Amino acid sequence: MTNYALITAAGIGKRMNSEMNKIFMLLEEQPIIAMVVKKFNDSPSIDKIILIAREEDHEELKKIKEDYQFDKVEKIVLGGEKRQHSVYNGIISLEGAKADDILVIHNGVNPFIDEKTIRDSIEAAKKYEASVVGFKARDTIKEVDEKGFVVKTLERDNHWQVQTPQCIRYGTAKKAFKKAFDEEFIGTDDVMLVERLGKKVKMIECPYENIKITLPNDIEFANKLLKHSRIGFGMDSHRFVKEEQKELVMGGVSLPGKGFDANSDGDVILHAIFNAISQGLGEKSLGHYADDMCQKGITDSEEYLKVMLKIMTDRGYKVNNIGLMLEGKEPKIRDHEDKIKENLVRILGISEENIGITATTGEGLSAFGKGLGIQCFCVATLSKK
Image (tube, rainbow, N blue to C red; front, side, top):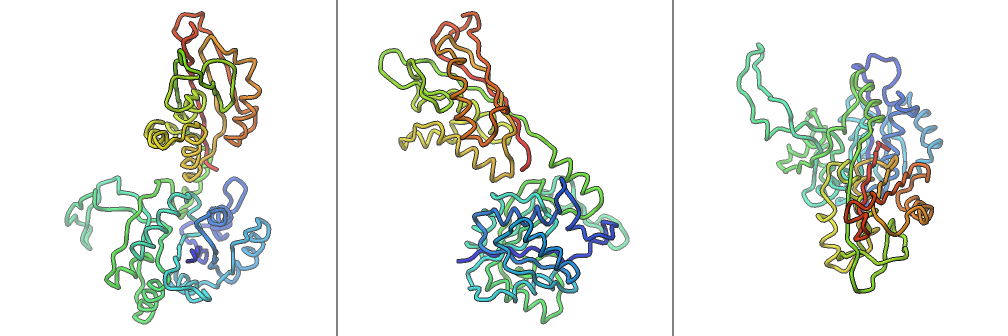
């Protein structure tokens, strides 16, 4: 089974009030279309990419493909009069596509799509034939008549704002678009044509930041979004074992001393980092993810952290920097700080200068300062990739 990304870039973009095609407008010094294609080119869920563009933009898109080394881009297809015609051109250009292959149709000006949304929408289309992403309406929605008077207030919980990608099995898409073409019907989105076949479409929730850049102020918002950072605060603590022998692990590094009294290795540093990243993303605490893994015999805290790092990556974020504050009597952290930092560089994929580690005994005022265990606090900043 092959997953094709059909990226539409053939629009004129009249509402942007610019002579330049909006797909070539810059966000952080790179064209919007390059940011979009990169998301799909880097996605393990996507096998091939088809760009659908205006004839006058063909050479510029070809240059972007070469400059950014987008190896999954198979071809650049000529667009049509309307977006629906452009998508249909992309569909009929596919050679050797099978009925169960998935078409992932995405706007070339939706740059904030994330891997989780791509993956979830593809899986839904495999199961239900078609899916569409969007987010729940946050404001009250009213239906009005042709004179502008309110007819009724709609139930907000049942209404969604639709975005892309919209995923359809190839066989279903070909049938739906041909029927619309033959009947000269123009829909407002891709899956509407599937609905006309009497089939159900699965709605997949996506982040609110997955917007289509349409108006001039959308560019300003997009740039702010790219510069926006999330901050998370995490903490963890464990007492030392009393009698039995157990390895002491902190930051994924084996240190001299008694290990932690915990079902896992009890690595307070990795646990605190996990909780800080999770909080920054609005996710749940460590136990929600790690308890089941621990019951299956997975006690290495790095494996737990990998789960949250994948969630972070799928959401389109990266770690900027972390700050760690430890309290305990033993071991002396300054003696092992370099090794811990070196390992965190490997795990988090950030430079050593973006990792701060400080430690205190707290003048022996707490159980940690008295040598009964260690507690660790972590602040993490995250930003859009």
